[in-house]
Image (cartoon, rainbow, N blue to C red; front, side):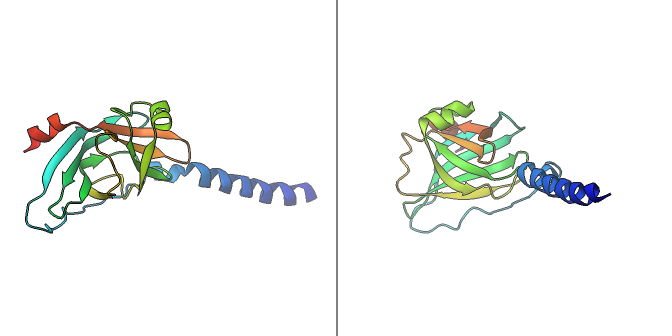
Amino acid sequence: MKKWKIVIPALAIVLFFLWYAFRPDRLFINRSVDESFPAAKGSSPAQVLESGTFHSLLHPTSGTATIYALGDGSHLLRFTNFKTSNGPDVHVYMVAADSANDNASVERDGFIDLGVLKGNIGDQNYVLGSDVDLAKYRAVSLWCKRFSVNFGSASLTSDHASAQN
């Protein structure tokens, strides 16, 4: 009988840590975001520089990633019609490669972390720092830091950008 007094609390602790590590509840809970395009600051309207369509890697992912030059000279990465799986600790990375189609390319080629994914569904904006060299960082990755895996990615090209104008 004394054995169960130790086993049950120990099992509860182990189950809690497994739940925290894997967060299986996030597979069923969506976080929707609906950010509007920022109001124009400056004299010229926003201009599409590059764009790409998300494709699935580890998780189903869809939508468009577009980089805009704003009137004040800053740059903005915007996701539209975006959808992916929810997960623990998913970040938006700008990857220093033409594509981010696997885990190895993201880790090998380098990246800039734009922050935590705001939501797994909906339109959202990420400000690009002035240090982001758009000639070098040519892909967007949805990276799960907890498990070091790529949920989905989009290769950015100016070909897509001209088609959107």
